[in-house]
Image (tube, rainbow, N blue to C red; front, side, top):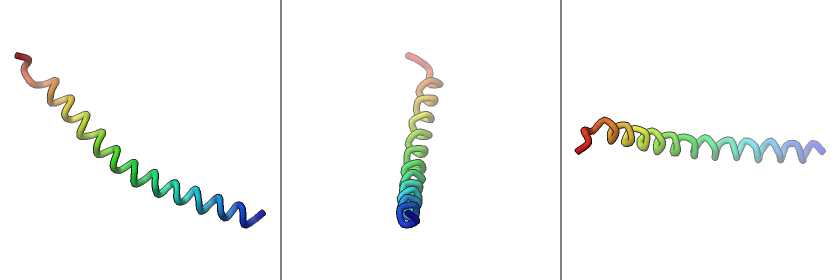
Length: 46
């Protein structure tokens, strides 16, 4: 039973790390996307 819990904790830690890595990447993409949208909104419309 202890082994199962340890395996679960290892999997959760691995997922956590993966989430963090993806989080950073998506946050950067999201920020760039939001910035470009804002930039486009502030441009004078022809």
